[in-house]
Amino acid sequence: MTRVCETVTGTTTAVLRTARDRAAQDADLVELRLDGVGDLDVAAALAGRTRPVIVTCRAAWEGGAFRGSETDRIGILNEAAKLGAEFVDVEWRADRSALHLGERARLVLSHHDHHGMPADLAERVRAMRAEAGSGIVKIAVTTATFADCRRLRDVVVDGAEQVVIGMGHAGTVTRVCPWLYGSLWTYCGTAAPGQLSFTELVEDYRVKQTGSRTRVYGIVGAPLAHSASPAMHNAAFAATGFDGVYVPIETTDASEFLSAADAFGFAGASVTAPLKTRWASLGVRVDAAATQIGAVNTLARTARGDWEGRNFDVDGFVMPLARRGLQMTGQRVVVLGAGGGARAAVWALARQGAQIEVAARRMDAATRLAADLGATAVLWPPRANWDLLVNATPVGTWPAADVSPLPRELVRGRIVYDLVYNPPATTLMRLARDAGAEVIGGLEMLVGQARAQFEYWTGLTAPESAMEQAAVAFLARRVE
Image 1 (tube, rainbow, N blue to C red):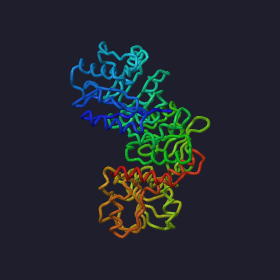
Image 2 (cartoon, one colour; image 1 turned 90 degrees about the vertical axis):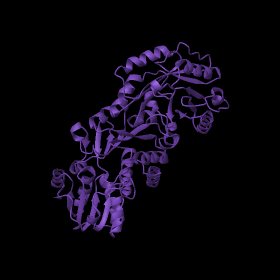
Image 3 (cartoon, rainbow, N blue to C red; image 1 turned 135 degrees about the horizontal axis):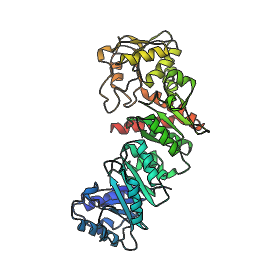
Image 4 (cartoon, rainbow, N blue to C red; image 1 turned 135 degrees about the vertical axis):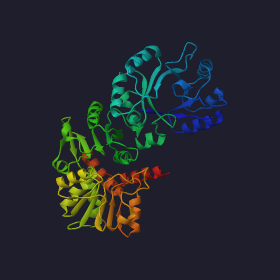
């Protein structure tokens, strides 16, 4: 079972101890960051602890807060070891000649790069292992892409005792799937870029319940900080007992994703902007409906080991309309945008016999979509007084939630369907309500397509209520 180490900091020893004891209620071990403590009392910081601790006094030259002499810093670590600290973290680049850990404390020999991945990382890792002896090697480098995460694993995985971290949002997979890297534990807290909270790691990503047999899924695209998909799918795995985990993979390069996902053995992925239209040319077998739509929102690895693509955005899009008994036959529908979401909406509405106009800021994109799917391209902005307006652009998405794709005077019609779900109530929806229109939010579509994805991947009935609750809770945290 993966161990979770919570990193705690404090400006005073008392604050540090309080944070330590709070973390120890849940975490398996606690990293005490002594750098930055103004009145440091090492004995007090260690006394009365109920969990094993990693004592760290990170030098400023490696991203920490300690700006004193190296003699003083190594002295602090020696004192911690003498007082019984279970682990002592010291930098590989530090002069360790005066470090004396004794027989009880284990060395964590660490190397951090807050700027990227050094080209000679493999050589550095080999040198660290040779110098660590019976200690643990910790590598923390900044990952900018999913391909970086793959390169990081290729460098470090060989069965040695180690902890491997890709810092930054791109490195989330290294934190929530530590077993992919042979890591002895994973860190949580707020002390480093990309760190997740204990609750996110243990309750959302279920890091203590996953391992080498777990099937890994993800959402691929960029940006992803607004996405509720990880919360929904991980909640669905938990509710059904399915041994899976779902992680964000932020990239704008479809081929990069496929290459790295093959190396990691990913089982499937949700696809979001800007990657919904790029898969057939990369050898993905796209089904007939997704081919007609011209967009893919779901990937799955087949029993043969290759990839197939489908589009469940259509399932999600039509569900709210069907629930309300709305028939679009002969109705004037305006779709804003020309991306993958717009394609799914136009395809679904055309099959219902709607009279569809596509409006996008780039007329050439609107014209291509309209020609592909039997709609009409119109100039931006579209004229008002529609039966249904569909916003398939990202305008209004958190954190830029105070904007609308159309000005107030053009928001006039019967129904507004905003595919943006974060926030749940968008500025466009507010303008539509003010104008007397019925509104439909994007959360219903999100849950609907996620439900279809889950059932496609697992063969199980999706726990729709659990998925919706998880999405709502995620969005509520974004507002706080």
